[in-house]
Image (cartoon, rainbow, N blue to C red; front, top):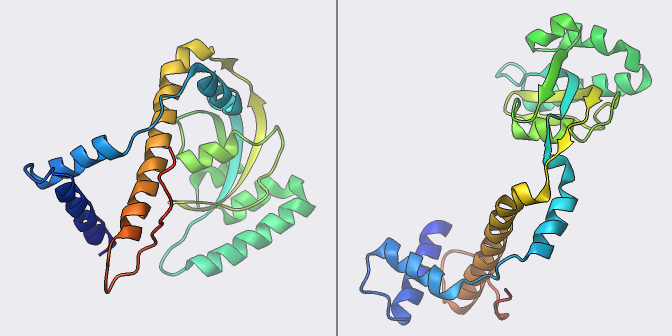
Length: 216
């Protein structure tokens, strides 16, 4: 419903600006091109972003990891699985040396048979949320919270880190510029939609609007 309302608001704004001679999707695209503008990220902005995301831009980094997977099924709903997983995580905080035994007893992953070991993992070898957590952990560090993925809930430990070689800034400059450009455009688009909704008269559907000028 919200998508339909936003689409109609955009089409009405396109008509107000004289863009109604185009097909509907083309009208909306033309409206965005005309009204949603962002500054090009300069080299300094890209460099700051690169420095803040340094761990992402390393080649060959690996982590020797292990985990305990608590799978969510129809017979084991999420709340029950989470309670069990939290108890095991508490136990590991007290007795970290019991990881392999607890993985063998509780993990729903085949790795449980080898103490939860996943071997050495590089970037791109596991789902993004698992990778993001794993590569933040230091050698021997246990995750401080449960990690939820589409496979279930995980307790994760980085047994050993192998640091990679830092990719030079010049090699990823264009990639960083594209990311910053996309982030800026998304923020500007979000605010533009808020402003249009704030101006519109909408009945029956509640949407958050704004009446402040567009900040870019």
